[in-house]
Image 1 (cartoon, rainbow, N blue to C red):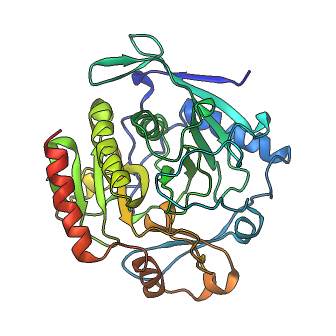
Image 2: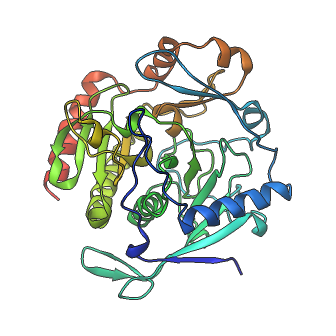
Length: 365
């Protein structure tokens, strides 16, 4: 039986700060969540359960205002499992294809269970729902240190469509970590999800990303809903520990709306500062009390030819670029990156129409 990681709201870490040049600050001591994932992940890497050994990745910051974090990870491009054929954003789960019920059980690090005053259950809209376990397993084709997959009760065979439970536990996982470099993300079908079995990604990236502090315009601020004011065009939710349930519900309403409209999307969850539509004070800029959840609607890719340099999915949209080959890693410029990403974004008119629809939809919740 896998290790159980039981947590409560009291385990959520609120006092995280990113060090600045003028104020190095003290690193937060590792949380139990971090030590459990990192020790389990490292132990399985040492035992050879991965498709390749991941050492320190060659990393550089591309010159330019976006400060893209480029990494060379040739083995992931070569060794990872061939993605499944995806034909629809609403494609049903197929038990005959690879899914997370078919993995080596030793890949599982632990099962997450939330212990509340109501017992091990989550509450939505005032209704108590029976406990659902979140299984955390190593990604055997890792893109960075600690790269894991978070799979809500694999035996339920859910397709790759976000649920409130998955979103809430994703946000809580970021809050359980005391490391501002821990990230979570999600690729929908048609947005480079490679397995049609509900899962999120989690990993550590020890570099600051612009998405952590990018300015945002309020759309429905009491629901934590904003629009990003920089490239790439997308939406942003923000929550601190007290508002996780409410914001998770709003995010799920938005992703359900996108699925209903057959709009592919990527999400990226990271510690970040509270959204603001102007330049923030240095203190606010480096504060990491809450979680930013970026939602990028995008053009669908079904059987599309992959880019030679990098695929445009959850981490690339957030500014983290795992390159598949040395030539592109060495020569790609910020303008090249923007040109590649732009090809996958919704046209401006379509994006603004969607912004109006989603604003009305969230306001009506």
